[in-house]
Image 1 (spheres, rainbow, N blue to C red):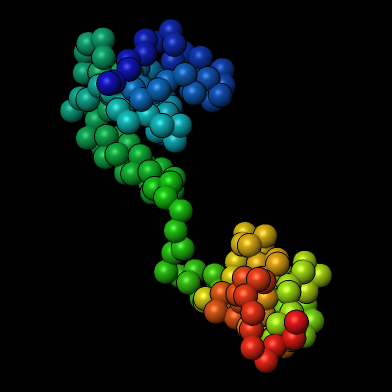
Image 2: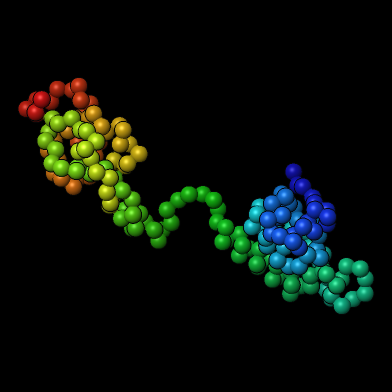
Amino acid sequence: MVMRHTFKQVQALVFGVAQLAVLGVWLRRLGLGRRASLWAVALGARVVEKHFTDDTTREGPDHHFALDPGAWADMVENTRQVERTLGSGDKFIAGNEQETAVVQRRCLRAARPIAAGDVLTRAMIDVLRPATPGAIMPYDLDLVIGKRALIDIVQGRELRWGMLADANLTILGANS
């Protein structure tokens, strides 16, 4: 579905960009200057309607505000630049961010030495950088509390699921 808006609806643009939010997906009126279409695209417009002419000095009601080939090319390029600047909206780690993602993220780490067989409490766990691949992430903290350590864990080491078991499991040779 494409929504069209009249000049009266778009005329508010002259008095404030905030009014653009009412435009939906279609900007239709051409006398508001070239930036209005870019604002509309930035706010979600998917169709921009403009008049086109080969010569803006021609006689007639529309030529003076229509876009000539050079202005049309500028509008298209500027619109594409706005679209690239807005991005896709998808969340992902870009290639140039892969290395820093490990350093910037946090994971669960031993706040003190933990002996095999100890049942983990919140006081035994720190949330620190870096988050090495395979480490337990902070959003799983509640799942870790109450687990039993399967091995001795030195202070500062990242916690991994393979180091932990349910507290009700009996571990031979471990502390009770």
